[in-house]
Image (tube, rainbow, N blue to C red):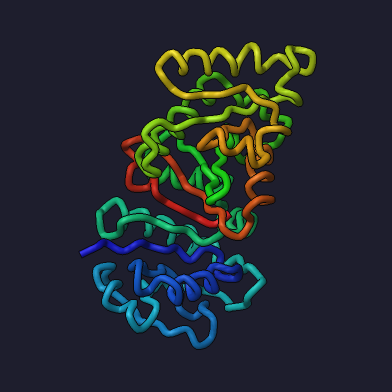
Length: 294
């Protein structure tokens, strides 16, 4: 029997409950999954079957959305995050990870969270899903890939102020990001020889040192070393010319130097259908297929 996918509820006041109901309507005959959350947050009229074990999800999904119940305190007010929900949201993610790591679920899909609500309501210590999943998996470095049919992008630095990027972008960080992305494209996307396009940090990729030196002193040496191992890498490329249609045909994923350099192109091109895929090393293999909404 195919193990089901676990779907964590995310912020109950957000779009997670609606997404769960819509996913069941579209996937119940093709992909077994179950929601971890409070059924009281689902849209009115959503058919629900409470389950005690993920193994029950496949049979239950024929007639209703399978829900592994996780009670939340606080009011059920769509559009208004409540501090009382914060710890429950965090616990549901951890519960989903436990089910994947135990083999009860095949993967974890996470509905969107409200980071400020988690920080204010439960002292959430992580910038987002990616960092929390890494901590739960016990690994030091994972990669956040945003993927759609039109584009795959990976930011080397993620949820930090732009002023901190030059300090955070080290040769080690860039190399880890490229290696994990390369391995993930082979393992999870079936690409035998991934082609990666690497953005520069500065405008015009530094323009030969006239607009910055990180391309010369940091990025290029890493690329040359990895090319010597056989990786197909192009760059460093100017961030303003690498995302048009013809350019995208030349690579399988783009490695960007900071959050918005990666997320603006994919959200512009495919806002409604892009997903966030957390890629990680072998020890994080179960979580490497963890997908959550942008």
